Image 1 (cartoon, rainbow, N blue to C red):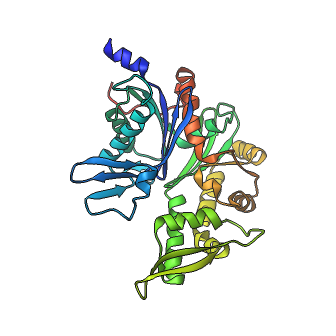
Image 2: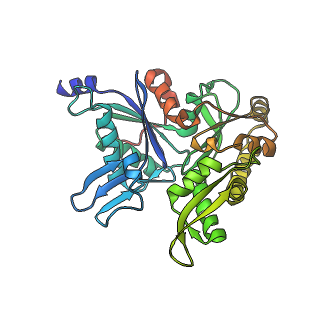
Image 3: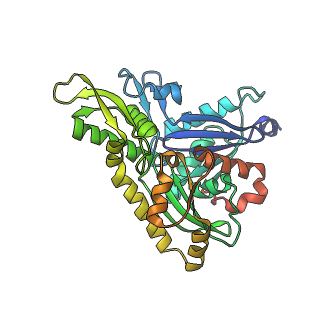
Length: 347
């Protein structure tokens, strides 16, 4: 009886457990949490110091006894205990205003396409240990398609490219399933790394991840811009070891990330080449749908359209597409259960 009461007071939630950001959707309330997937832990007391934005500010600035880490790498759990603590923090935060002392919500989580059964089980176990009553998993491209309100059950091909922080997912969806797919461990984080590498090679300047991320967001682009952009970056001079500032422009950033973008284009092209002809005809007619935080890179849709000779559309608010898709699942779990992955838990 007590368990049923806790379940009734709990709010069902959908989670986009991303390498860069974790987003949380609450049934009947919408998106309420969008925080970086970063956790700061005090190793002396084993207590969480900060989660999300507060923890991200600590990256590269902590004393020896405080470790600020990203517990997810390439979309999968690399540190089980820290991920569990992060999920528990978000679940408790969702229920802070309710009367549930020990919330037991049902949780829908988006995961990458090519994760192994062991990796899937790790996600389920982490969520259950964090307080979930039931855990449902859905492939991220399927969730993104639902979030974009695409007709996923129709007998027609939908080409989705979801560019996250750790993975780029390419999927052709038809009749409620993924017909052809490709998952690359090349995404937003690799673009950021490419900018760090470029600054080191061309300016002899060592910059941090946050600085490179800012450069990517402010002046990064996939094709030439109408108006040139530039910004100053500060870091450590590798020759003198002292602080230094240099100016970087959009063409230099474009040069630094061009190799990564070419890899993305090639993988999308390979996926289309291996897709059944009838579905390719649908893709030519409907075009490519771009979702995920990486879709926000300036002119990325233009580059893909030029290289693939199909129309490309970036959906509204691409960053939240996956978590909005988990919300669609939550609104009617019975009607959408066929779109979910089978559970790894022993019944």
